Image (cartoon, rainbow, N blue to C red; front, side, top):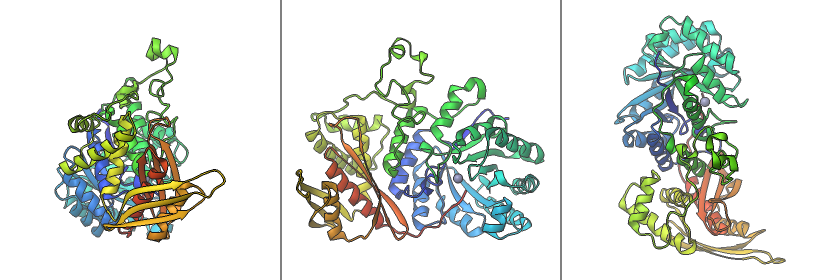
Length: 512
Ligand SMILES: [Zn+2]
């Protein structure tokens, strides 16, 4: 058996399915580039048949990414699979991932199909896919709750049709590590042609065991692919988290004895990018990427840590990309220094025009904030990315008054399709007043699901980063804005969310 563990990232597909985490094409492309830098083996870029937006995102990622395999999810039917193959055209390495549910409950209640029909459909889907692309992954949805005899027949059949990866998901997060590991092991031992495919695990975190179950699937079950997401993003309690799997396998190589292609130096930047884009904030005590995960990174220089770091730390913060909060740039920094810092942070902007725009924003920020940290630069670039795309609304300026005992009032100036609009309102607080002002002109009618403010680098001198989550007609979007003035950051975030609401909203829920 190979000693190589394949890391399959599904942040852009399964992760995006968590309500509120939907991303635009440009956001997905930026995250895909970061995943490529991380040296993720397979990037599941979306579900091509779900919407035109998903299709276009996969297409853009397939064309831009060279080092990772790009994968598109498809239900087990010809239309979905053909749509995936179409979206993946031009990829240097492409994979079609097709799935069908195999548990009695899902077959009966959801698919309304007999087991024999499911078996036949799985077989035909893989055969159809294999005629289009060599690299075919098959997933038995709700695999862990499937009847093993039946599951063995399905897996044997799809491997005979040419499936090269077999994924056995714990779709509902019900598994226990030892049981799940043995479940995979038994399947591998019983399926006669099991050695012709790579086995994969895909675990959900409903009982907080997604990472433990995945590792058991690898260690006990012999799986050699783990499906995971940055920050464990995903529906309900989320998916198995990439950073935890990677650092567990690396830190305990003595036990797992497995090699990974991943370059962990890019983990923290990937984590920030995903949380800033989706508005799903990382808890401070989250393993590996939480602000307190390392005494070193949280600024608590305990005596023991200073004397000998391995007294408390089993990993080195800098190995996963933590840098101490240091001043990297200031007001006098030139365009070249800025561009170089972007490169060092692994940020690639698409054009000189994009670099110029980012530099202009940087200068504007540096005028108001004397010390610019890496976090500021990343927030600025992320916020710019969010503003760059649909471009219906652009923030221009804001004025607000608030005083104890007086009702706050705000005036926001913004452009709407290139036309300057000035809007005023009062509100419960300055942020509320500015949102009401914008809404008085835009009249989106959207419902606000979430409003959150984060200090990017930890002090009151830092930029505020605001996430606004809006919902309209069942569509949920996130807007992000950053500025040293949190009312301005809030207005920017609100406009960014409104921009995203303009996009098309045809969405089909995926499973798995
Ligand atoms: Zn899933």
